[in-house]
Image (cartoon, rainbow, N blue to C red; front, top):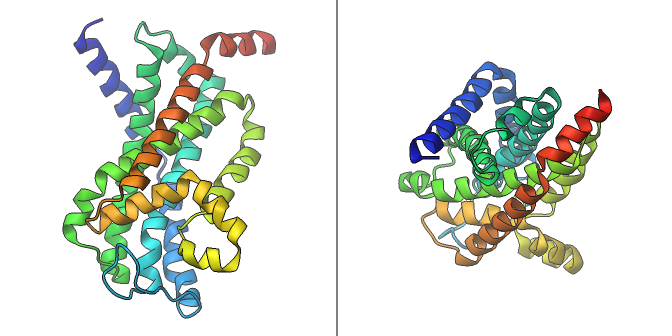
Length: 268
């Protein structure tokens, strides 16, 4: 196999994912409605209840809308990653993923290419959300922050995409996936710093605060938050990267074509 074959496969998977994204406009709209609902409706009610004091990376007092925007960016990636994992189960059921895995290219490269394709689609939706938040709600991080946050967004999308792929490895039926998604999405989102600072959670419940610290999504949100405001959070990036590598390794090792073929043979 030459570099040209790898590039041809990479472009093909990317094109397929973007075509699917273009054809599923309702999925794109729903991915934006959810965070915009939190930003416009819920933030208006919580603004006076959950006032945010001076804390890094913000140099002064901020509104609640400003605080939750990075967390809502993580929400977009989280839900898209789980929907992407659902499509992986669907592709496996119909055989398109099985066809992809018959390629002579290494399986880790194929799965990583799939994760990158889903991740870039999620990042594009995050940037549209940031544009709406900037001009529609008045949440305006530094312009340079929109460029600086790209590596963080891509890393978080890879981490959550690898988690979704790991779940898709063990979920064999579409009807079981919705329950698994809810079991993963809501604890990860609400036990994080997406909607409220961790110091407030520590004041309310120390043991829940510890759960938030153990949640990788907390560190993913903080990596996005600091990068968006042109600051470096090395600990958050390191933890997010380590969890990404762990999830990717487990997902690659667990996604076995033999298991898929055996499942198809049994159903036949």
